[in-house]
Image (cartoon, rainbow, N blue to C red; front, side, top):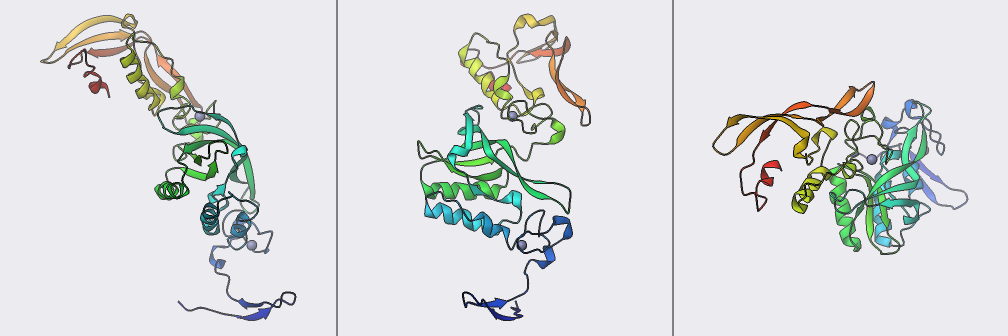
Length: 312
Ligand SMILES: [Zn+2]
Ligand SMILES: [Zn+2]
């Protein structure tokens, strides 16, 4: 590649010589992104100037660990947009910590008081902004090296939105500050009443809703635990598996007898779970009361829970 130089100048105060070269980001500058307050040129992405903003994000903070500081700063210098910046997040900016869904080991829900980076305003006049928001903390280990390795893996997967890294000041444990289901959260699904983020499915937040499923006991601890495990992984309201008391099933009639099982028809009084509504009206959770279902006896031993394999 040819290296273009326009000329040489000298700072009269510091006496330092400076090379004048073309603006390497000129092809990305557009009036739709607004103007940079530092250099006065059009921004390279909404409310973000690739020449001036990355450097600014590297200033005024420290994790008190040189390796982590350098690692984050290197990422910040490469950030191509305001919302893509990864930062060091002091632990005291994270409040209301709750271990909410145990199906995701080491995931803790928290509120980030400084807030998630957002671009606000119409094109041409957009500004950098922060909104206090729920975030998921992924608990990692205590070693810097392992933290950075794990970070690189998660970053390459591009599944979660990564906001930054924090360290529990009491235990010394490092955590990634992320939005675990960022790729699934959509405004048409409505807002989660608990974490106030967009739901991952219509009226269903996969972090907050599974632990709230109303639990009926089967009277057997192993079966209860197994059903609980299914519930915690449920990806939508309709996918929830539950214990159904036999007296909630009416009109049971045998309809088919095969080699390994018998099939019955029946009316389920509580009814199957459905979601009513559409993208413009919004959605509500609903139960289709007294709906027709089939019952099938499970093969496998009834004493060693082999039959649960058929459900999973
Ligand atoms: Zn600039
Ligand atoms: Zn939620």
